[in-house]
Amino acid sequence: MTAKIERFPGTYLKESDFKEKKVLFTEWDPNAQYAWDAGVAIGRYLRELKEGRLIGVRCNKCNRTVIPPRTVCEWCFRTMDDWVYLPDTGTVNTFSLCYVTWDMQYPEEPEIPAVIDIDGTKPAVGIMHMLGEVDPKNVQIGMKVQAVWKPPKEREGSILDIKYFKPLDE
Amino acid sequence: MSMRKVAVVGAGMTKFVRRAQETGKELSFEATKMALETCDLTLDQVDCVVHGTAPDSFDGVHMKGEYLADGSGAWRKPYTRCYVGGGTGVFTPIHGWYHVASGLFDICLVVCEEKMSSCQPHPQGAFLTIFDHTTERPLEPNLLWIFAMEMNRYMHTYGLKKEDIALVSVKNKRNAADHPCSLLGDPDITVEDVLNSPVLAWPVQRLDVSPVTDGAVALVLAAEHVARRISDKPVWIEGVGWNLDTTYWTNRDLCYPRYVEKAARMAYDMAGITEPRKQIHIAEPYDPFDYKELHHLEGLMLFDRGKAPEATALGITQRDGDLPVCPSGGLLGVGNPIAAAGLMKVAELFWQLRGEAGGRQVPGQPKRGVAQAWGDLMQVGTVIVMGA
Image 1 (cartoon, each protein chain N blue to C red):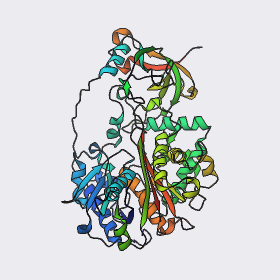
Image 2 (image 1 turned 45 degrees about the vertical axis):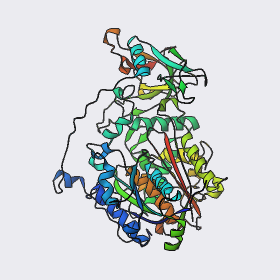
Image 3 (image 1 turned 30 degrees about the vertical axis):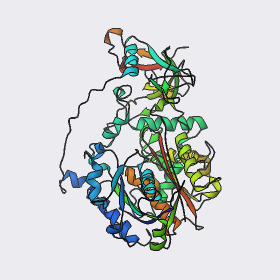
Image 4 (image 1 turned 135 degrees about the vertical axis):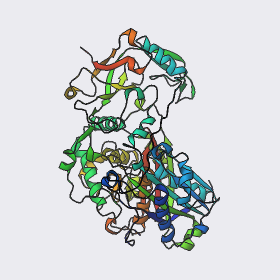
């Protein structure tokens, strides 16, 4: 069929068509605001972050210890059994060196998001956070890292109470 | 299970462009009209309509499915819109399939449309809301992060180099040069071009990723007794599968898409496929990034884990190779209007299995193909097996 059709519909517009207002369009800048409840499990997670601690949950049926905490084990579909304090150290599972922001700005120094498998989880599972105090060239998968916390007075019960994770001195 | 056989009997699509003058409704109409004309049907013969399109926030149009309905021929008909992230384009024909397979309807129109250009300055602004609002969004994530991190994990696990993966982008953009609707077809692109393109989020570079696109695709599905009457070459939907993994994506093994495997097993079982590597002749896996084609070929069990790059280097996945992969040109080449991109892959199987793909035709009269899409927080797999 594609071989038989000679003309396909769809009209390509150039960026300049908009800049020079050769085509008509309307614009809208929504002001959408939300306030999300943290909930039971993440509420506790945030309170512990404010105290400078990481906490996960354990399911005694599948024997997993996971972070971030949740009230329900999604594997077993039953209530989690225990809260488990976890160390603030871990291993880089994967990372990126990001040279572009979502709105197409290009910073000179890359941001380094990573998935960090937190020590004490079973099987090893992670959270997303940033890496810092490290030369981007030296970041490696498998690297041991530790959380760098904000001073206690500046913490407000947020994932940002951890500034970033830095390579662990060994 | 008692299910009726369902065939694809017609297909239509618009050009895939960076920014279309037409509205989403107008694009939907063009693709739908073409699909009906190619099988000599009129809208009054259509029993129901299903539509696939991205979330309302993309277009800033609440109840977008309802807004688009007039363009997809749904006026005063049974109509539903469905959405499963990037997996939508392959899920929507599955949604249409069960309307017909169940015996409820004989002819179903399947329409997928996307107009990504409306969201300013970039549709990433709407994408960002997929991250957890409390534990992740305060980090101000960029959508590219998760793909870059999944790609890095995949490369690390199997010891792959950027060169191994860039071959996919080169193959697909070259294939797309033969697609009359393609946005980024380029017969002359090289691995060096990909490796020299700007780094966005290492290891992802500009030419590793598909573009923001506007476009629409439509299919006509028919029950067996209708399909045999109106078409001399119906293409049968032999198997369908879909599967969703957890949104705790940082708790998952990112090097292997288990949810794609589970969706594929469901579709293969239904199609009676026991040896996919022998019984499938064409694959159209989802390729919004070059590494995703490799990831998905492994999830579809068409290659061993970590071995799809080697097969690509050996030319096995070229249009004239043993297992042609993305002969359409894929999302990397034809373009990525999200829901429409997935349905484009199903349309490509329809044209290929009928021997009507023109310059893109896979040699050797292929008899069976698989199309797959993927999305959400790297967690959904949708799979269709089609046979001539």
